Length: 277
Image (cartoon, rainbow, N blue to C red; front, side):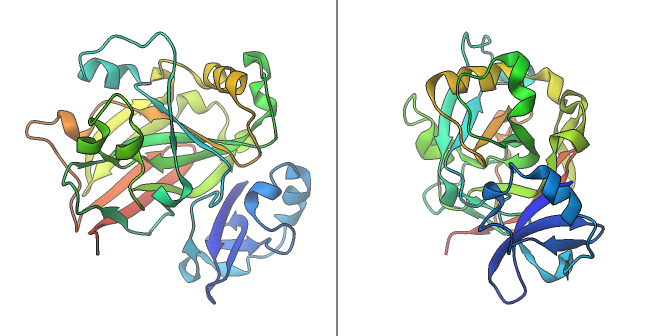
């Protein structure tokens, strides 16, 4: 199944099941997508219904608009580690994003007035399906609800103010999460998926997910050692080589640009870029 959060034509928020070119509205079943992730069997039964809206009629919200946690991983693709001239880190590099730093598919990414160093980072997001703690690598399959595309728009100048990445990763509406979540069962072996970023139609990043330095089971085992994850929490697993900061000259996103992040087992997340108003 493909699951998404959206605004109905009247502007009210909801969530539902993507079917063909439409969405089955499930807003009456639970207050939000994160509250329904444990009930996949019931959702599969609901998926037999006819769509309530065409995708062209609704506005995409971030897949999970209100996660308890968005946990991001830095320097986690070997190609990205190598392009920066670094050695693989001994442990995962972890930082956090805030929910209001992200938008859904089709919504504008906002380049802040504070800096022009606005970079793309195509990533795979893992959506957690149940409360969990101390999850062993062999058991991660039971806690993953599905996968989505993520563009972790980064303001490099602010990211480099100190050893802490948080300021550069949390500008308002600087990242994107969507267009929907594909359930783990439908996605299959996610490590074989291609992760591709395009800026104005030009491919700027391309790798397969098996290029991860710390794979998804390792990340979940590590993260659940220090925190309890909740249904709807998001792990953004890192970006691959080709980020704009390492182009010569640097390739920053600017107003008027269109950026796409594709994960072959999921779909394509597409956003335009605007200046801060």
